[in-house]
Length: 145
Image 1 (cartoon, rainbow, N blue to C red):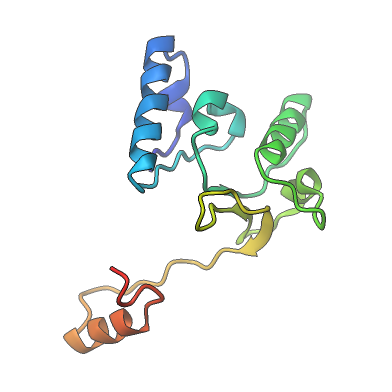
Image 2: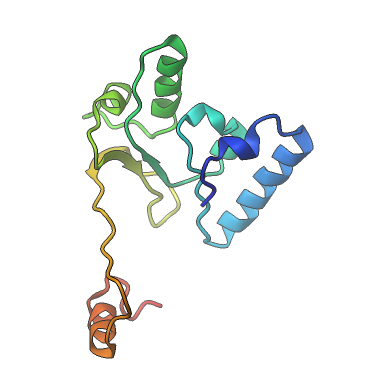
């Protein structure tokens, strides 16, 4: 995760941007996820954005022309869903909601969907061996890895 991604890209020289694009492409080809977190989708250069497969977009509020441009830019990065006006929905999302699109098993972007994002489940302290075994057995990837 690269939080506050604008700090990485603001005023970055072209050779650095090219290297970031190359590194993202190489890492992604190995099945490793790379996430750039930012308040404004215009912060990430198109060349880098084009290398990213998974997208999670929380609400954007569009009060200025620049904000409206950011909403349109974010909407255009998703594969369209005929049931959804992506640009409109981005401005209507509530806390805990997001637009999501992930790569399918063949590496193609799925159509954008509106989703609820569950807060992380956590506890203070380690789990017991029994809890660990139960969590592993109940996992959707049990036996795959």
